[in-house]
Length: 88
Image (cartoon, rainbow, N blue to C red; front, side, top):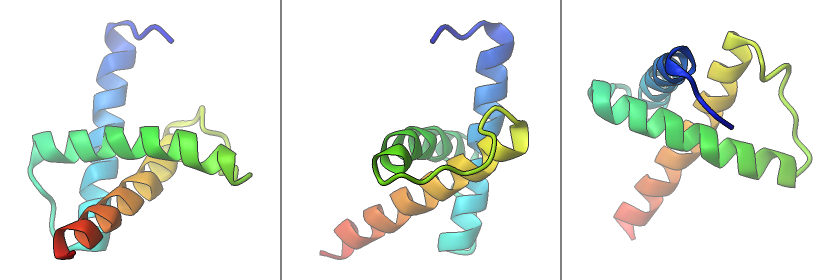
């Protein structure tokens, strides 16, 4: 997959939104713009590997809203895993 300039910007925006939403869902606050983007993008990557492996498909991932939902769920899973490992 090759990202042109616009694709990169859209990915960063989706990552920021997904990371912020995940931060609100898990801890009630965001983690800052850069950390939200990182959490959102890593969450999207996690979801893209995890969901097909368990046979879960969430709507059309090609749509903006679908991508945000998909990335947010992955980011929530990521934050919950990080919280679990921090406590251990």
